Amino acid sequence: MPASPSTARAINDRLALRLLQQDGPLTATQLKTLTGLSRPTVADLVDRLQGAGLIHVVGETGADRRGPNARLYGIVADRALLAGLDVRTDSVAVVIADLLGATLAEATLPVGETEGDDAVERAVALLASTARNAGSAPLHSVGIGAPGLIDPVTGELRDSSGLPSWHRSLVRALQERLPATVLVENETNLAAVAEHRVGAARDHDT
Image (cartoon, rainbow, N blue to C red; front, side, top):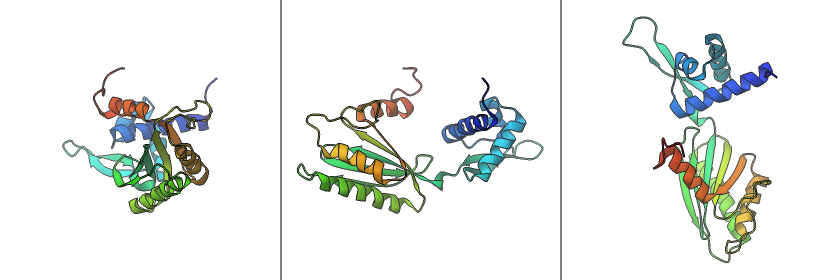
């Protein structure tokens, strides 16, 4: 069953944004080549993403050839903020980045063994203050890396012996209080993803 026009547009938009995030800035012709879409579809896609404030013209290319220069399109990186939390048994580290991954602000909070619920409140406050220091854009997504097992159904940290109880409380508090999407993953899995994308395993199939 073919996708509806609105679904097809959403799929195409997501593909173009992913390419612009990974390989941008790009011209409309480059987007056409990379996506395999027709020229009119790419033109419509570019207009739609510009109208939504998701991409903008960041320059031109083609100065060494005849004819008009081609516009280069890039992600509007400061449209929203992304947060990463590294949750350890005795600390929480926060990094705030723009939509292209550039670090805008970071902070670390030591956590004592007996702090419990107070650690949660301090960590939530740390995230809020660090995000404010990064700018006025809204917080779009929060990724949390923590030791322990993640429930595949609920996406929450499971009870684990040897780990502080405030870990689970922190994840729940952020999910309940923030309008942003909050995701949690095992820290070792995240390290593996990072190595595959930008580290020792980059350009390897496995």
